[in-house]
Image (cartoon, rainbow, N blue to C red; front, side, top):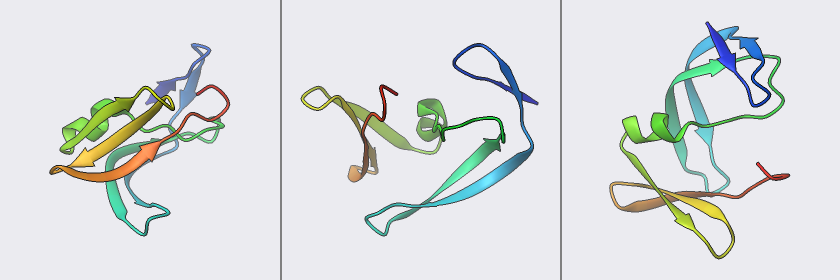
Length: 84
């Protein structure tokens, strides 16, 4: 399996599975169907992947961030980093 990254280059997946993500708020979420490629320089979470797991996203246009909720409860805010 390969991932297509931002510059349209193909990057091979070297690991896949479930990843336990511990947030700074001490909330842990399990991300299923994760793919890892050592060639990628940043971690990326798919909106569609979160949606399939029951998460909902909304946009905060004041600080250009993404708010993520599950079952109506705020989980985390994703802020842009270096334009991404």
